[in-house]
Length: 303
Image (cartoon, rainbow, N blue to C red; front, side, top):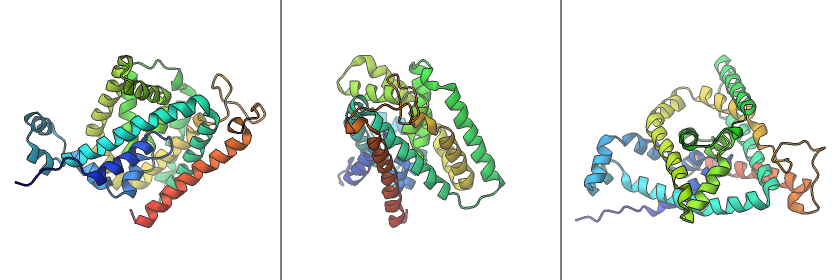
């Protein structure tokens, strides 16, 4: 009898890379999936999930779980993503608390260069493309004015954040973490992940609400996303790019003690390199460089 392998180590490593991408604004988990050659298998596996899938799990029918639903792929990928998110959320929380200015500058550079490459993905510029680019831009600006960071972050809101961010994560070039920043829930989720690792039960429901929203969204929207991505590629990319352009001010790195955005003239850095204007510029270009490297690898691999 052939032994069933639930852990595919290569997929586990790809999951680690996707997990790192998913918590860094401007880097897309979908892009990593494309680069590493598992994007199609990921979408196909998600689309296989139905009610019988859960019955198969409850009955512990191992052969059917692997042969019909590709569970070993899903298990290995999720395990890798979870591992890297748990580890790197600790690092990000430390950076937020100690080096917030260069970190926001790095994120700003990531998004600026992501916008550039998303625009390059639009193969034909016509009326529909300009229309959806404008719609996306308006939506981004509206979201800025609404200032969702002032909304009460409760379980229902985290459920919705899970739905929206995971939808973005499935699209190559679009960052789910960036969506969380726009929704004002990014730092909340980083803190939640950090505290859950410490088995702080006060944060368990936060994580449960977010994951529940993500699971619902994956099943409801994965087929729709696949369809729009294939049939209306240019329109999809133009709308997403416009949205990112309109909401770009939310990542502006120069902030006062209360995290309010300030201009260069108002910026009063300390003598420390990591709190100075030089670090803002250096980390901005490092963010740009990272996206260029990822795009180069993606193009070289022909994915």
